Amino acid sequence: LGDSKMKKTLILLLIMVIFFITLLMIRSQIDSTSKNLSLITPEGKTIEISLNKKDFNLTEFETARGDSFSGFSVREIVEKFSKNEFSSLQFASQDGGKIHLPVADLDNIFLVKVKKDDSEYLRLIISTDTFGQRWLKHINSIKLLK
Image (cartoon, rainbow, N blue to C red; front, side):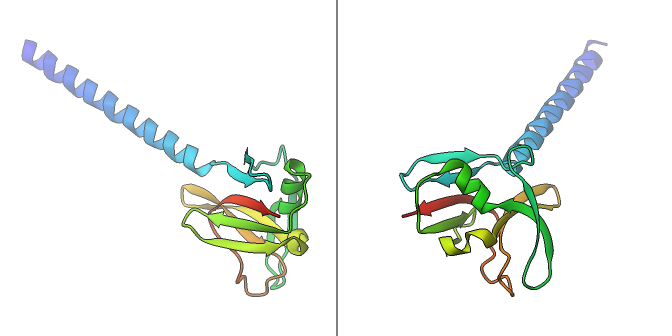
């Protein structure tokens, strides 16, 4: 009789451990998908930004090839956090990809939240690119260069 109670207790304990591990994994995945965007100012100050509809306007735009998107204007993001002049922007992705864009393109640069399976990432889209040759996935930082 005592052995049976011990087995039930161990099974219940094992189920609870599995449940908590699952919760931790889900939380970890949520944290990584809602990861903030880092904005690095010309002075080298890093600002963590959470892109959301409450703090930024969601802009409807169309690309040169006719695709329609809803995204966040990089001009709005940059102007909200940096009043200093800069000549170009460097976007970096999680996989190490980088692209430099001149300030002249600022009105055509957007960040779009893309949901794929159970994850979400930021995609850089330049609306004037006909073939999307400068688009970049999994953006995690913007650096403003003098």
